[in-house]
Image (cartoon, rainbow, N blue to C red; front, side, top):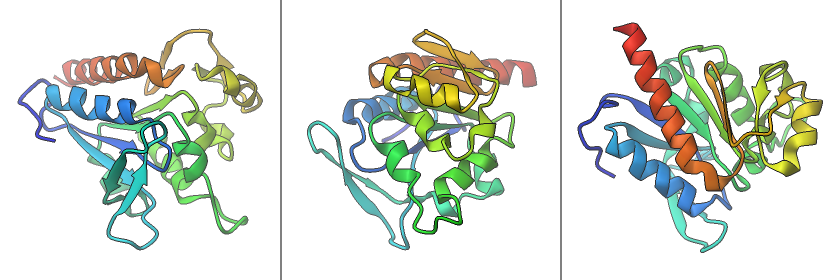
Length: 199
């Protein structure tokens, strides 16, 4: 998708993808961020393949991803302005590890991401499941999530807020996939505000 010139020109926003993603949510992010001038980069665990094609949750719509999250070290993360973990089964599938003595590559990615304060970390709906083996990343922080996940995030030490969107500095959380417009708007506003501070 071609990005239009806008206030976020030069910004790159990463979106994690796996099977059973919510089609409308991902396509909304692609359109909305591109309208503001940002480049949207789709990322997944490629398992040594050049690309993988995933089916969406409702229409089974295909989506091909060629960005490998395992290649995204600190240098790659520093070129992103925001990293979004969307709704659906994305987080649950990406937290899989074949070696129980090692965290999933996506969890390692999030650990790196949380060490970069200027990088906006955004989680929609069930997205916080990805942090279940790294609860220290959100311990003590205010968040919102899907109703089904409230007990999980509380057990992770986060402070659940009964709100559609919660912002805590570099952490943005929204309640459901249906709030993707709030997610996009909040990420856009946060990035614009950080630009003004930097100026």
